[in-house]
Image (cartoon, rainbow, N blue to C red; front, side, top):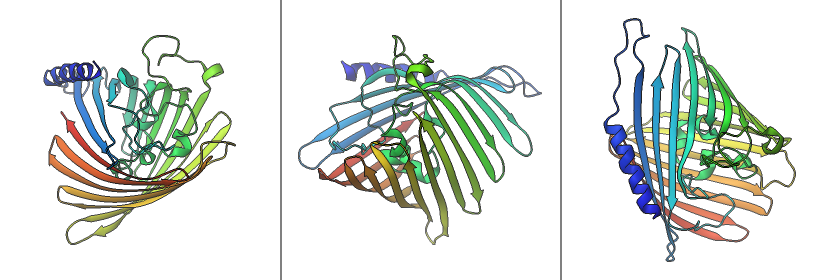
Length: 345
């Protein structure tokens, strides 16, 4: 039944995408509204090389309608399905796609955005439903890896019931973008919500019971490097993080980029108190190779993970990413094989 529902949603999204069109603008740039739709489908296979396997699906449909010169409506939906529970059993899930519940349909984004661009900077404000993964930890090298810690540091995702994938919440988001410096800040309703109806729905604003999540981050763009510094506050427990990505220079056959990250949670008795990670990505032609290693201090001990990935661009609309994950903690040592296929329209 779940596979049938996912297939039906995919067919519906394909139909909508095939009929999406962009209406012409007026001479002044303030003409008729424009509508754009795009679809992304991720299928991921896991194996522990001992007979255990899992199959994950993620379907995302993004829609954007410009209703005025500086105003637009943004809506993104998510559908997730997996064959069985996690093969790792570790506190920090191996895959960034591995959602706890199977979700037939939910909203990742739904709201009104305002944006103004001048010669020196860009300002934007969004109000509505949103999740943290839309705006934070989305840099190019971090986003290449498949492990969940590169999607959102575990000092946040493992410690608090907040609006990280696949959950979302009502909130406000602001961004400033300059030539060298940029900054962003967000305020979300707390809790892990994905239902469209009922008392625990996405549209609730209940800081008295759910709490409030405040996040902020600054970024410096230098010559061949990006440096990020950010922090969050939820349940009187601050979290700080910093990470940097830099280019080693163009080699004979490709580009080599590095990443280094650190984060600390100041709250007591949290699942993850420290996170440290470092890695590299080598790009040549239509193929990328990556290696990322992380060390986390958990409430139950320590965890060491390593990911070796290869990204292959098959076409403008399809890519394949096989990966090997090694996980070592106080309860297990595990090698997990992963293969992710991504289709976009």
